[in-house]
Amino acid sequence: MSAQTVSFTEVSTSGLESSPVADSLAGLRANEARYVSTKYSHTFATLPAAQASATLSWVEEILRSEREIVLTSPALEVSVNEVEGIFWMHVFYASGLAVNVLWTREEGGKRAVGVKLSEGMDVPPELSAFRFARQRSKLAGEIRGSFFVIKGEHPLPEEA
Image 1 (tube, one colour):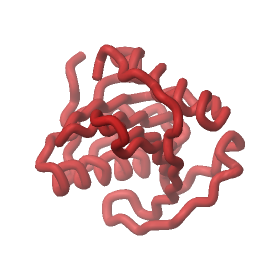
Image 2 (image 1 turned 90 degrees about the vertical axis):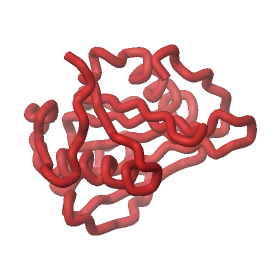
Image 3 (image 1 turned 120 degrees about the vertical axis):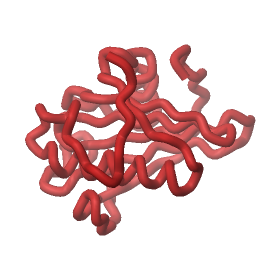
Image 4 (image 1 turned 180 degrees about the horizontal axis):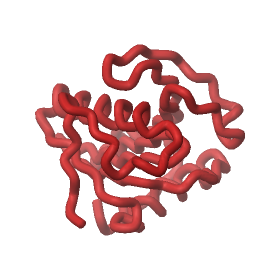
């Protein structure tokens, strides 16, 4: 299967059907696609997680090494985007969680992890220490989000 372009005008649950909050997660994915398109004029596409295992491992290693977070929900899709010297890796999980890693290529650039919860999902126990800000989205309903700055060095995966 090849990359699937994510539309933010016609929200689709394709690839996310196994999530109990598939509609909300699809809206959250479309919201991310709209952001990338509006800010960077870049097309947002996803792959099944099994086809982006190096990127998925890299994101999950950052969570584990930076904050001792081990997610229990299966990953459904991964998106790798490079725009203006910034890598954006997104992982969409069956629970309704979306994790993104912003990694600026240049030394000393911005590097952070963002976590967003789809409307209708509970805060996973592994993220209970986070405080979440609420945001309304026409595509995703209510999104709860948080982030942290990456402090360590994590060489980019081969897929990026």
